[in-house]
Image 1 (cartoon, rainbow, N blue to C red):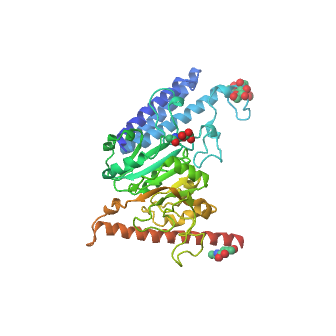
Image 2: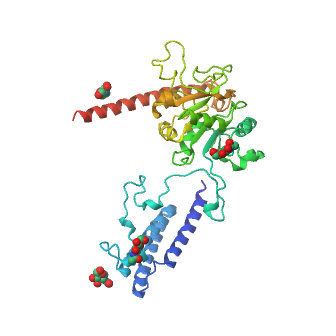
Image 3: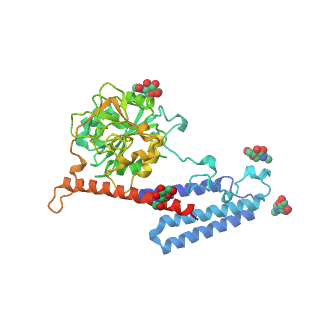
Length: 406
Ligand SMILES: *[C@@H]1O[C@H](CO)[C@@H](O)[C@H](O)[C@H]1NC(C)=O
Ligand SMILES: *[C@@H]1O[C@H](CO)[C@@H](O)[C@H](O)[C@H]1NC(C)=O
Ligand SMILES: *[C@@H]1O[C@H](CO)[C@@H](O)[C@H](O)[C@H]1NC(C)=O
Ligand SMILES: *[C@@H]1O[C@H](CO)[C@@H](O)[C@H](O)[C@H]1NC(C)=O
């Protein structure tokens, strides 16, 4: 972010905020009171000034302190003029003046927002783009119920163009750019209504953790978090959603064309049916027919999450494990019963084209090719994820058992 710009905007805001405060109800009618308030303000401003002089580099902090001081003094001034008393909450004066906001404490508010009256708390958001003018209530001409994200490089634009066209206007389109090229995408008509997020050489799960917080994407019934190298000739997103609803799938993926590359049995497309939730793997691969990779399992290349499932999965994504390896085997922890509500949609299927992308963009080290370093990290992350999960589970059970015995 441009810090200077932020500072300027903040200053402008503070100035307006102060003007607003004194221009309206807060200014006392009694001249003596006015003097008192003005003096306290002057002290506040001076204090702020001296703080600023002593710590010139901390101008942002200074502004905040000054504003906070002024705000407190104004409220005190208010109270003494209107003779507002706590034990008489129904007094007429209460309706006409600022109330004592320091009395507000609502434990059921979201963490950190306890000082706000619940009616003003907006704890969830969406990715709908708004205009700069007019009535806010008339901004939105549509409110898509589904979100699709692709993590993309510009050289894959034609494939992404084909893919985006399989998603109707009922989808918000969000592109994560790992090569820094964003404006070039405007050659596509749909690019202007898409959201573009750019951060060089980051992975799909890095973006998802940072830009798809469940409270931010709360408006969407389903979220598609997809790779860029998927062939979508036999796929239609609206039809896909219909099947996911019909079969009550919380986490799903389209079936994969079975003749391309190696893949798990579970994710291979089966002809002549809508969906499947269970499969057979090679002997000895599944300890239980209801456990991955025989059931309760989809891969991380093209997953689709319901709102509720995503709220859980987002919390399971680790900040530092950017490749997401091992996540797929753990998805079942977010859904109950997992073997019935995680599945593969056969009737709408895709082709994994395995185009080299980010995997090729590591750094040559110790005589190894860039892709080798990336591959090694993927495997290490998988191991780390598994260990963290095991340790977390152990810690949890230990704490439960020890509280039970005391
Ligand atoms: C404030 O109100 C109380 C009772 O409500 C009264 O006794 C007191 O005189 C009032 N003070 C002023 C300054 O009006
Ligand atoms: C003060 O406001 C409340 C809620 O808006 C209202 O019920 C009450 O009648 C008002 N009291 C007076 C004295 O106007
Ligand atoms: C978009 O959603 C609406 C409401 O669910 C539906 O009627 C419409 O057919 C959808 N559009 C497409 C292209 O499927
Ligand atoms: C905790 O107790 C459960 C059953 O009560 C048991 O299965 C589990 O092994 C115990 N875990 C530990 C770490 O003692």
